[in-house]
Length: 227
Picture 1 (cartoon, rainbow, N blue to C red):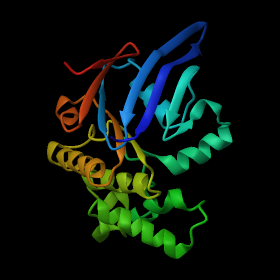
Picture 2 (tube, rainbow, N blue to C red):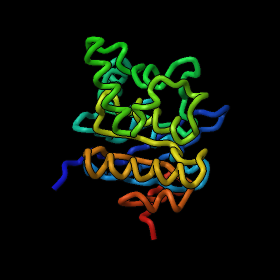
Picture 3 (cartoon, one colour):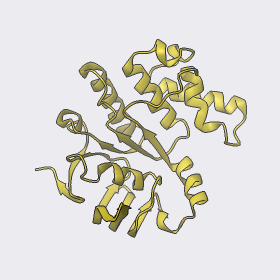
């Protein structure tokens, strides 16, 4: 049996918007085993991005217990949370967030620049990550010289380069044509099935969700199994 990668128990998140208290997530329970590819669907405002931000350590819950890869995040200081996130989570964005003046290699190397790794070790890690996404032949190209699908694969390599156990993806195929989207989804499946990565993907696309092992729907902060 796989270990539990994500354990959420009665997790809530609230924030003030003007004079109004907004609660996008309330008493949410979630268990995700290591190596699962999970899709999250739901309408805008249902709390999907809030949940991703909690799972990735970008934000902290207002209440409840959140344990990721054996660490309870609610007990970490902001500094410790930043260090934990660098080791444990890779974030894949819809719009890639690549730096235009850097090559694919340099974009992927960015998360490693503050690590204690030597230049040789950084180089080896970047090449290995680009090889996983089949882009070693484009490593010296800038984003403007790449297709949208290639840019997203560079972004995935950047998320992978520190070898985190958890990948979170926010609409990773939302800006791609169907052929490129299918390649990205196949890559995510391989990362889960062959490399043991746990993946949580937010998507509005039912065809993208079908690539996952399991789909949950988030409705007003409540998780529902896919019917």
